[in-house]
Length: 201
Image (cartoon, rainbow, N blue to C red; front, side):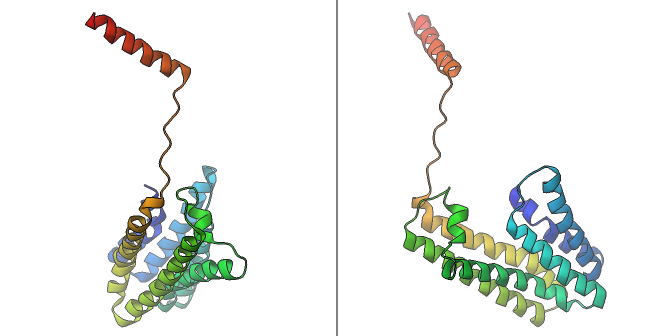
């Protein structure tokens, strides 16, 4: 469910483009990104920093596309977002000694320090490549193909990358702890066992 919520603006962008044009689609995507954060804020849920970065890029570059009536700015938006993320991952690790990927995933898995570094680097390289691929598709093919790639191609590549990492790092995943039974639940289980034994007798 969270996955579809995260790509909600992209889905609306795609659908609106198919019905109207790139400029109306851009306006809808801006409104959707704002509504996305507004929804979380009203429900008093945590708003991830990545969502703020995404909002800033779509408002700035999407706004530039609407003001200039030039699709080139919105085409750059995914690349700017991907490269910003790669920059943050790299600088945080090299300059500040903080592994962002480790901070995000350390509750789900336990990895050796060297593996965390490789994981952080792999995400950095992945986002750099994604930024380059977006530019290639955006300026080598039609707007229609780029919009389709933006939803299905980029999202698909992200899912495949995540699945491959889960397969490689699966052995490091923390097992889900068994829920501790309450006193009442323990009493109920004992009562059920006694009843079964009584029926057998």
